[in-house]
Amino acid sequence: MQTITVKGGRALSGEVIIHGAKNSALPLLAAAFLVPGTSEIHNCPRLSDVQASMAILRHLGCRVVRQEDVVTVDASAPAACTIPDTLMREMRSSIVFLGAIIARCGEATMSYPGGCELGPRPIDLHLTALRRLGVTVEECHGQICCRAENGLHGADITLAFPSVGATENVLLAACTARGTTILRHAAREPEIQDLCDYLNACGAHICGDADGVLVIEGVECLHGCAHAVIPDRIEAATYLAAAAATGGHLVLRRGCALHTSPVFPALEESGCVIRTCEDGRTTEIRAPERLHRLGTVRTMPYPGFPTDAAAPLLAAACVADGTSVFVESIFENRYKYVDELARMGAHIRVDGRVAVVEGVSRLQGASVACTDLRGGAALIVAALAAHGKTTVTELKHLDRGYEEITACLQAVGADIQRE
Ligand code: UD1
Image (cartoon, rainbow, N blue to C red; front, side, top):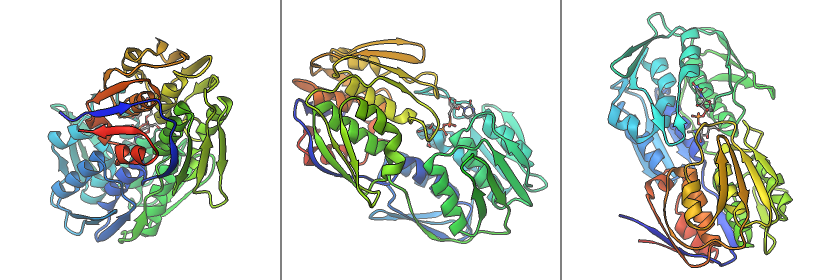
């Protein structure tokens, strides 16, 4: 069993290089299946979820090679339109392959993503939208069997909620459909823009406006291209939280300050000073010796405060002077990691979607286990701030979303080891 050991209490100081965004890389790899040719995905992070996507592509008949940070996908000869349950279970978000497989093969079969560590993960919005594009959906023995007998056609679709995954599935299914698709109330996350940029570079005709309306004019066929994944705004937010919790001073390079900016107000309220450089790619944070309360943090779809950044910031709030409140509006069950933080001496009360964090003057090292990806990041942030030794287990969650987190933190002065 692998563990991370942290001896906390050191203020972090130095530079961190931000990797490519997990939540962009995954839909981009699914999108590469649409292209009867070769795509080069640059700045592709080394994460277990990315490996799971690569395994799915290989199962579907693609040639997939990684060299450094470039993943090359040759999808010239698809060989399957089914994702086996074992691969689906590795990564719940593999549902984003659905739109790509139907568009390319005319049919797709995969198992339901089912429940996950964040609570139930329904896909009703995905399926309703795909039906509007001409897909018939049947459920058989826990499998979703989708077919577009007469091909996919454009439609005017309004999402009941701006779901990121449903927006991605519609984009993938609609870009080679007959006619024009209008998608209203679409997600506006930066990863959606990244997917549109990649698809347009492959020959798709997608344009969007700031109000969340996407217009997708179907084209006959796509062609390969080279595309670089945008920086990971959640990884960046996690390092900002680590600096905040330890009274540190970090400079994040190769990030995107604009995409990360929804977390700035909460950090500034707690006394951190954040500076972004003109290139838009560098963010500097200077934290006070002890944070003030973070106020009320309410997660919202982009450009609101990202749900994925709430856990690491909540960990920082545990050592702030005063009471902070977190309200989770996206997922039902995002506070599993709170019990682990309590082992370290954190004072947190959870009532449904609300967590009230009463800051304590110090956390104590303890043995804790990651319950989910961002909850795992919260434990690392708390461990960096805690006095004494923390041992973190269940690292598989962390490996889904953080590339080389121990090396990155060592480089900025943390006493952290992986064994
Ligand atoms: C993506 C991100 C995830 C992030 C989330 C919200 C990836 C791989 N994952 O997840 O890290 O936390 O966006 O920013 O990009 N919902 C339904 N029915 C549906 C689809 C969604 O009820 O058909 C609900 C979900 O249960 C959830 C909410 O809508 O409560 C948001 O989900 P969605 O935006 O779809 O998130 P994901 O795409 O799964």
